[in-house]
Image 1 (cartoon, rainbow, N blue to C red):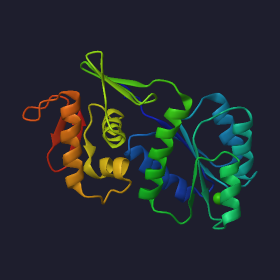
Image 2 (tube, helix red, strand yellow):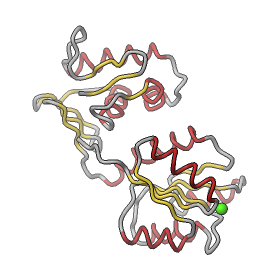
Image 3 (tube, rainbow, N blue to C red):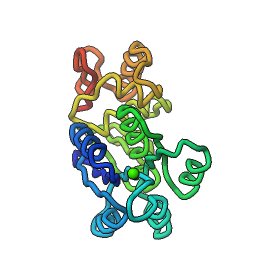
Image 4 (cartoon, rainbow, N blue to C red):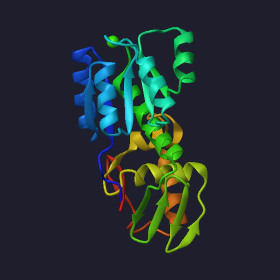
Length: 228
Ligand code: CA
């Protein structure tokens, strides 16, 4: 089970914004580092790796693009989300070409940034190709290979069914809100919750969980679902 907090490095020179983001990320359960310049971000990344970098482009010492290009040049595949006030197509394309995983244009909603972060972190797990394999009882979910086994036997899931189980697995043992599950599987927290109930039923059936007395996917009434 991977319960270790994922580490986010925020590189942003606007102190009030950085402080707000740091508090928000911590409340979401992430471990947070802050840097106000390219130099301090570089020092931090050379010291120890992050799981995700949120990178402002307009920084006092150098352009954030410099750091982005540098990390990719040395083969660092840590997901990087660029924050930019530059609402022009060219700089977004430039950032993506330089290896950014995503970008968010200021001003942005925190919910949007968090959604992009979750997506980039999932993608980061995939591109790094390392496990992580989540185990709950005799259920084994390989997030990188997108495979599931129960008692050593392969369980076949559709893409959406796997996405649902993977989102639960990434927070195994903790309740995951309906909205987060809807967003992970259907791309919007406002998707119809009835879809979710149907899919939870399907996943339970596929993994052999008893719908009347589930032991693997547990409903948290009025909130969401929990794996294990
Ligand atoms: Ca700035």
